[in-house]
Image (cartoon, rainbow, N blue to C red):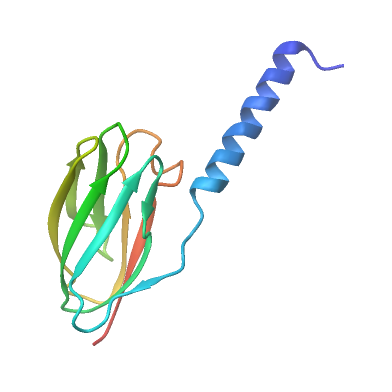
Length: 131
């Protein structure tokens, strides 16, 4: 027999697993064409849309970040060597723009650096290929 406290713990763990699984769903890749240098990323509770992006080495992206949530989020982008390329806060219900220079091929990871946000699914990648 499981105690009432034990049942609550099990339910809480299951809830966290369901939310994490739903929030972390990888989207179909957004492929930027040779002339396409502007990208809109919608920021919401525990997700970036799109969160799977393909671009070319040498692209300079103008990224417009639209925060639809009622809390501040963040966009941190790491180079393939894990150096921080960009780290900006996006205030609640606002839009900001950043410029990102994709100087080398490889995988650029991005995420929200707010506590537990990336764990809950606020992360993605930019795969940069040779032109």
